[in-house]
Amino acid sequence: MAAGDDARARIQRFLVTGDNRLKQGVAHAKVRESWEQGLAVAREAGLEETVRPLVEARLADLERPGRKES
Image 1: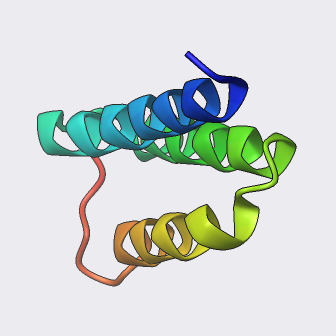
Image 2: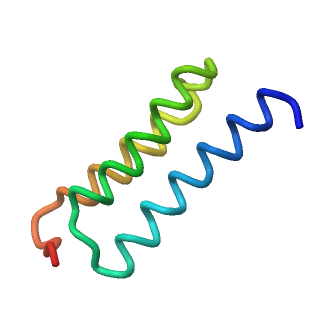
């Protein structure tokens, strides 16, 4: 697996982990941590501009009024 493919797989794993944590009712801090880790990997791999909008949308939804933390 090429380095770029490895980074993409790690990014996807962090984003999906955050999504799953949210669905399972895990604390928002842990959800946010997963997504931010994915963004950090993207930054290191030069993919930040592609991934940042995905993470920002998730974070905005997480912080919207009415979203209850477990």
